[in-house]
Structure formats: structure tokens, C-alpha cells
Length: 128
Image (cartoon, rainbow, N blue to C red; front, side, top):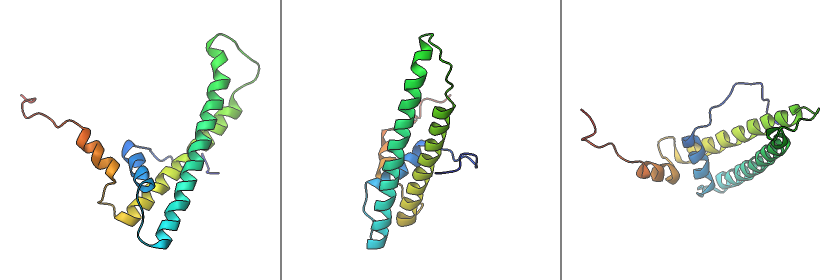
């Protein structure tokens, strides 16, 4: 598991889209493709673990919104969620780095190009 006390990596939509780009393309050499598949498995595993930790946290917290309080604290759930978030962050960053290592830092994945196309261009008449 990753150390949650270290420096934080900011997860941005572009970083997630780049990681998704790694999921949806093939890499040239057999070694690069094997590495990509290993990172895909790691990303999927960490995503599932994070989703389960979020679900456990939400299930434990839900009764508290109805005014029900228990003597049990939620430190275990919070610690598990923090740890799996750190692991998921590492997997996202690693996947994005793998994409850039294969395709170069200047080649955005198709998911980023599609997002750029969906964003509305600024109107030349919107200024003063």
C-alpha cells in the first residue's frame, strides 16, 4: 500500500483522461504492451478497492445523518478510504506516465481531444 503521509499528487480531469487513454490504446512493442496491461490491471484493482472503501464509509456514515449515533468511531473507515485513495492516485499517475512514455508528452489521448472539442469556444462578441 502507498504511504498516505507523503506529498500529495493533485488529480485533475486531464490526468484521469490521460490514464483512460492508456486503457484504450495499444502500445507498439510486446514489452510495452505487457507493461500497459499490468498497469491496466493495477488501475482496475485500485479503482475497485477505492469504490469499496467509499461504499463502506458511506454505509457507516449514513445512520449519523438520521440522528443515530454509535459509540464506534469511523477512524478505521477513514483510514481505509485514505489509503485506497492514495493507492488509486498512484495508479492514475502511473497510467498517465505510461501513456506519455509510449506516445510522448505532446500527444494527448483521444479522450482529451474529444473533451476539447466538446468545450464551447469563446465568442468573439463576448468581450467589451
